[in-house]
Structure formats: structure tokens, C-alpha cells
Length: 316
Image (cartoon, rainbow, N blue to C red; front, top):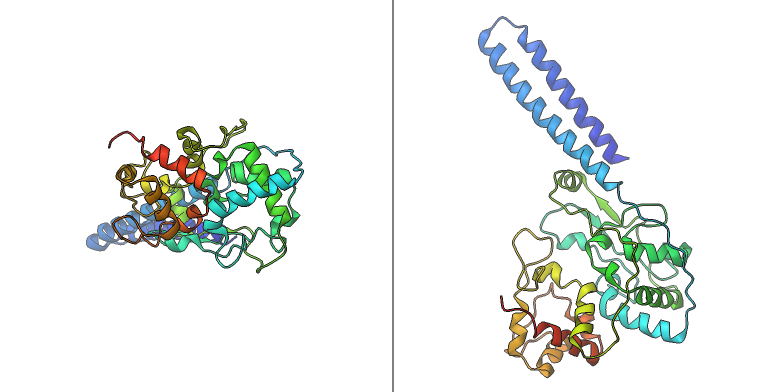
């Protein structure tokens, strides 16, 4: 509602400036006539452009959609165990600030510009997810759309949608097994401010990963390059380390991460120790932005698979 009010205000200001320019044009003083009209016209054009960009941003904000998903999760012990592993090693980076999947972390605080508030949701029964169907949760993870058709902005910037169908069901099973803990979080969780909406409209913010309706199957688990490739397809390493993992580039939303070809100089034991302790083989502490804690909760097998993939990256 505030965004619509702000847009209406901008359009009104643009109209008033245009009207002021017409009034000034009628004066007999040449300096005031040309100078005042020119200034009013320029300001009106600028505000009109901002209004159009903001309107485009509002359109994009509400344009994302994805078909409903029909699925029922059995909630077997095996699913819950697998879901816990994924949540500990991936979801917890955003959703476990003070307790297991209790949310409360404002991801927007880590962005280079103040574009809004993006508080991770409490995924225990305290939060809204307890009222969602299994299909609702599946759609939110795969395509970043909630049951009310709202765009889950930060979710769409992650690679959570690359989880396999079975792994998403496992996460749902684990979420269903949790006890109610923590405090309720905002619903919806994402709130772009006017600057964020304008940047979205101007194409300066991404509109999220493409919507996908195709099933995704994971390769067999193991300490293999192929399984490491799968893990890194949903882990968000590329948000900081670049699309090819050869280093971040200026202008990206995430912090600038180094070229991961550096892992080729480490032994497997050193890589696992780095992910478990936050200290690399040279004794350097990893940056605060690096979510090594959840990554370090992955099993030795999973970390070995990631190591296999990283040590076979093309040389940058």
C-alpha cells in the first residue's frame, strides 16, 4: 500500500511541476520565462522517469508466478534424517540465527545498498509454514512463490530451487518434525523499500532464478565429482565466488569471494578442516561473510565430493 501511495505522490509531483512550467511560461519576464520553464520541465521529466521506473518495479514485484504443486510427504525417518542434513548444511545459513530454523536474520543488512528488509522466516510451527500444505512448501523452495502468490525475493536469489525433488521432500519432512520454538517472523518476509523497487524497475536488481516445472533428480551420493557438482548447484557459493567459482565480480549482491581454484593447493583433510574450523591451511581466518559453519556441518562424504569438484575446476 505504501508503495502505491509513493508512486501516486511521485506522479502528482511530476504533474505539479509540469503545471508550474506552464504557469511560468505565461510570465513576461524573459529570464524567468525561459529559465523557470526549463527548470520545471527538467524536474518534471526526471520525476516522471522515476515514476515510470518505480511503476515497472512494482509490476516486476508482483509478476512472478508458478503453478501449484501437489505432493504429500510421508515423513519417513530416512527423509527426516536427510532433510536435517540439508537444513544443517544449507538452510541454517539464513534460517537458524538463534535456533534451529527459527529465522530472524535480516539478509538485507549484508547488501551493499539499503534496498529493504528481508527477514528469514521461522520454519517451525511458530511460523506461517505450519499453515502451508506440503505442495505450498515445495513450490516455495523450488520456485520462490508463497501460497498467496507472493514473490519470495531472497529465496529466488538462492539456488534452493536446484535441490532435487526427493531432497525437497526430505526438507519438508524435517520441517514437519520440528517443535514450535522461537518467535513469529514477518509474513511476507521480504519488503523492498522505494529505492529497492526503483532499482528493480531499472534492471539493477535481478528478478530471481527462472521458474522451473521440470523434475530434478540428484546423482547417487558419494565422494564423487558428479555429486559435488550437485551439491554446489544448490549451495550458494556462486553468489560470492562467481558463476564459474573463479572469483566474485564488482556489482554482485553477495560479497566478493576469492577464486576457488586455490583449493587445488590444499589436501582433502585441509579442506575439510577449513570448513569445520573457519581457518585455512595458512592460518588465515575465513571472512565473516563466509558461511563456513553450516557448510562444515556437511558430512565428510559430502565435503569430499565438493573437494573433488573444486579441484577439477578449469584453470582461471
